[in-house]
Length: 389
Image (cartoon, rainbow, N blue to C red; front, top):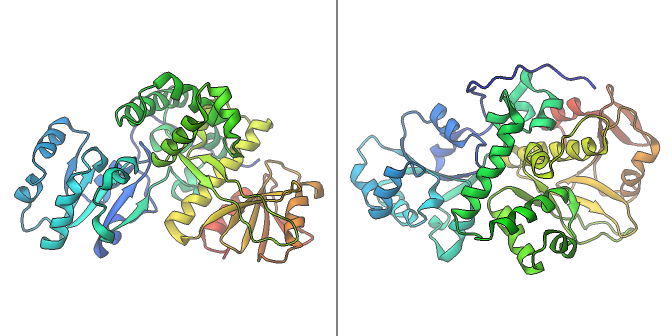
């Protein structure tokens, strides 16, 4: 496996991101959503230096605006054309004032948050289509460039502060604790922290699979209805992605159940309580989760195309389908066999897609029966260049 060495440090480090905030805000207001520590605040500080910013994690700012949302309008000057409200879900009522200022003064707002949960509840004003939504993910292969290291990405994950940390395991443990404390308890999503903590570990062990909710209920010792609620919490706080099934095959009947992936492989590692090392079955699962992260980031940043997976009732399964044109199977192996391609070959018999790819640890590309076996690095280069359409 070929990787490029990366120098890790605890010092803050700025990596240019794929989300261009100034360009987005030239057109209209935006929500910028993403899990905690994906770099939303750093992105704002580096690219919107002149913008008026309200950080709702600052207690004094939070108290002032919660008591008087109209204070924003009182403080705006004639040169304040862009206004940032960081962690807007802490005071959803501010969106009424934001709406008014967009309509009356043409102010362009950037509204950031780590949860869509509070913004969806209680009929909160979501600006009636006057703001678009953009997502910020952990760091990507394209963003890291020469400092990307596959082993580090899989062992640490790609949250910026943890990827460059001098003690990533401790930082990951702290992140998991912070998530339980701030995202779940502070939002009042659940007050039974021990039950949710048990569930979270069981859910992490289901990463990348079709979930059996009854088994999760039994293992976590919580009611099945509560399990559904907890999965919704993870999705609303952007920690979990639901990958729907691709159901357009005709020769082989597809399954209708979704798979679920955590947003970051390092977070999966600490929640599962195990390390992902090369050569183990766990590494293969982690490698698949990492590629899912790249595909999801590319979809949200560039293509806008949906992602799905295919599994037939007879047991064939292909990890990812991009739009309706590309099938991607992930194999963390440096020598892919014909047997490893059986599901791709079965799907290819349907003749519905343009590309059939196997992303692997091999060092050179090759083609077998119309299926292109690609080294992971070449796949990512070609993905981000827009080659698979």
